[in-house]
Length: 345
Image (cartoon, rainbow, N blue to C red; front, side):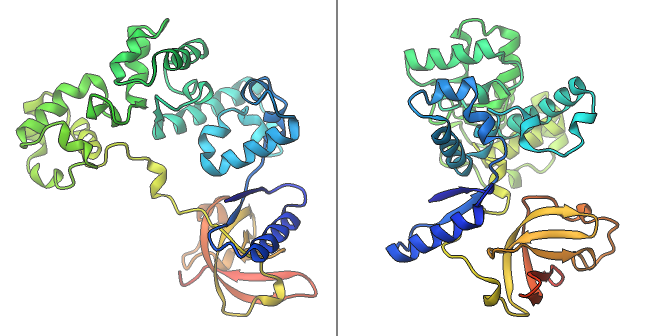
């Protein structure tokens, strides 16, 4: 799979990649255009020099762009959020408050997804609640010295990771194929007792979780309030435990639309009125949104064509990066304009 940055000469590189794929006859090779914001900042950073000491700056940028297709979250946490292009007015704001707000959003994202304790980099671990940069380096050092973690409780052996830090971070760290099946869920160790009691009550054991979860466990819980009281927990905690027992190791990003992989590039002359396409929202402005549909020019979905319902601003229905279905309304090759609609989807 080819990962192409969306910066200078992006479309020309896309055309070149499509031609190479066609010449090689590689039916299993595809490419995708990814956001390269901050790649140059990363390539010149101290972290990039530590991770990729044998490569020069341009090749480090290439590695970063490739990794953004593999796991964008794990790669983007290595870059200061201010360098990812979040608007032209960011310098007008109090920088300390801006930094705190952005760091809070990044930490929230990482904690929502969780991190694999045996593969996460120090940069990703540092965004987990309760972990300092020193402790993150100690976790990786412990992993390299002693092999993979077999359980969350093994974290307590890591230097400088105290009981309070363990309490904060444990629920966000996953251990796949470990000794304890619950370690691969978002259930916090302090709720293991309740989770195991629930499993026993319903006729299951922790081993039943390992096979991909217990699909029908929710149907067995008729009176949630009564069971929650019996287990000594609240109903919201019971709901969370049931969710995790149904889908252990679930990555919330799996429910998002799949990225659009391409093998060829269309020209404007290939477009026809009424043609239905899938594209990626590139920009949202006051009067509509520009959508990349795989041709050299982005198409415009006017605000009146975004939704069947009335909206005051396109941002109420769309955001940059959304995968959307569109229909071609009109094509003006001379003026290089493509009009699209989202109505009817």
